[in-house]
Image (cartoon, rainbow, N blue to C red; front, side):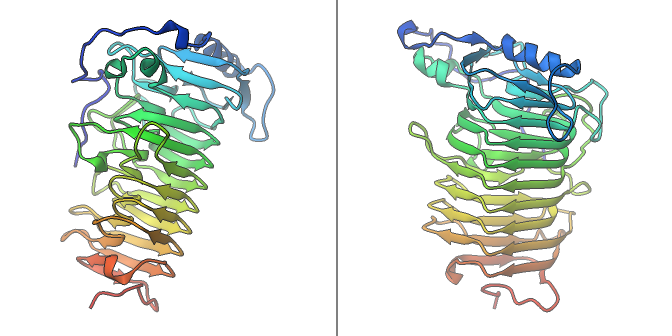
Length: 367
């Protein structure tokens, strides 16, 4: 297994300088506990339901300050359409994600709180620290984290300037959709490569990255990322990449991953990536001004099947491959269709044992 850093205990390596508070710049915050109270009401079956039978926690228009994660329970729709939500988390003592679904300690598979929707809202984990001239004290964080869950919709969320980690993490999620979200700006971790900075991370729970429940290596299944925009913000540069993974187990690939009709700009590594994912469809995306383009790869001992990369446009990227399929020496990739993409052939590469779909000619086929 290829692991990632252990990161739930706090933000190691942050400087300990004192904050110089500029209270005049801060709004009249509403406590995040007000949102949690609405989520608790939804948990208890109080209020209206949406079309999927989820109880709606509708957040009134205001600016809210979180000091710990919001916990979302099963059959709940957190509607933050009118809200701005910022964070002032301590360096230690809480899990560093603005939102987390409810998961018991022994929960495994996809059996945690599910049938969850999170829609709308402007989310910013570092804005409050910036206003108080103490960005160095902001812990590394995720924006939204869902683990051991099924039937998840994240839609219309705007996520600003995440520090080091991920805007949205789907970890052991089955039937998850991220739709029409804006992921703007990322503060890179100086101790990790830029490939570590996925705006939307597909993960599986292993030692060091299990936010709740069992570290049972459950992969993601049936994931749709569509209509999203990933870009720099007004104050921070772009993400490492829009989507990808950096925890893998060759015997447990993600499956059924569709990445369609997204706009990805100014990422500092690749635009769109999948790692150890089978049944992949990457279609109709626009990747512009990124260091690399679209990159699909296997891992050692993990053969993959059914990869489609079709109808994408890749422009003005940097020195990395603009479109690549890389098979590890012990992880061949079969049934590959790379067709109808707008990308210069000089920037397209196939590495290792990549077998085209029967009757299909790959774009820019290898010599």
